[in-house]
Length: 622
Image 1 (cartoon, one colour):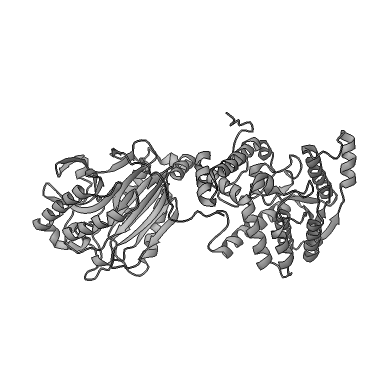
Image 2 (image 1 turned 90 degrees about the horizontal axis):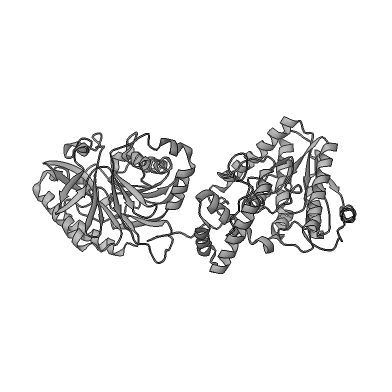
């Protein structure tokens, strides 16, 4: 399956018999008929099995191998790319090679460069390294086909798809053939392996594979021999792993005596985006040229695409090692604030506490920081500022939370002040336009700033990364603070942090009030009964769009397709979400340009001083 720059790959460990090519090819053909992918990989020397030892010298085995490869080509049922291993004799010398096949044609043959010759392996007894032959041999004749030979990059002619092949020990070299192929254009590296097992080897192998995918800024598909290869002292486990850009996609090691297939979805657009944006990778390109052959092929796009795993609808929220992730984020935010307080000599912290999610997180962080630096909690001044859209529910939540935490509570009713301001500027005080809303937000900010001056303190900002992305802030209002502690936290992650803080970091029983905050509809409360998500859509979906755009570089059409899949939206619903997000995102950059400092928490940020730089006047309208 191949669609919209997603490629489904399969790593196949077949049931086999040592030195029995006919049986092994029968099994390969059977498995290929049921493989639902566009690229299928079999293990090293899979046609013969790896552990043939001195049988590799026998003409009968080599002739049968060639005969069975011919049969595989003639009966190949697979529409995509098939990669398998076999011995190959050239001018009386044996090489351990990978065949890359599409349909009835051999696209290329890639030889193994590094041959293990230590401990339980003594491969040089039978095979020769490719380093010398590739210098003089670029094409060979095999089964009446003229086939490219050596270091090859296979490229789909019209898309991002490209890959190279290395074999087992090649991966373990200080600078592997796969590293060099990646630097010369291969987005994916395929490894055909027969790596045996012993205690702890799996974890070392896993780290190596994942690290290659990170260093190569690409994907790594690793397929190894199974238990049917086991003989004498060596035991094989069928450890297969697919990784991309430093993340494991799928892994298996079942010691299965039956054939086993694992699938992974490779995001080719992500690879292309990371390679464009990673300056270290760019700087390394062209510094390590190799004599590489490029082979073009065509791979048909699928009419549809089904993913192996459902998309994570909350990609910013930790799914594993939750406690560790929470501790790391909390440490980042708390220590960032401690540094700022110490640097400016602040004696107090001023926070506008609304009773909503963002200000609750900021308040919890401030209390933790005050305790850490031995600041009296009363030096935290929590300010509620009821205005024209404030509900009793949120105001009471704010008061209850501040009371439980023992901070100074200050309530300043802004209604009279705001009405006076409306009279001053000639507003009727009834029309709920932008001026009606923003006058309240700016009044709140002015109060907080002046209180900070009075108390030699700092105004702690509360706005989160999702609001910053959507521009759902008031310029010179809640957009402004003296330090925005939540600037690097998307809304979906704010929920996670608030809940974890309440559960793990406070002796006070905050469960009820935090539960009330979490259940309260998100709102700036500038108009009565105002609900943010009715205006801008659900934060879950907006955060997913932000994640795909900033981390993967996806365009609008691809994101629209992905959120239809992830959230089961109709085409019109997904189009509305994407259109609305990007309309706001591009038009609101001027607010981000003037954003205050705030700590970077994730691998992405919208700070105009570091991670995301964009002109304020981008016009994407047609």
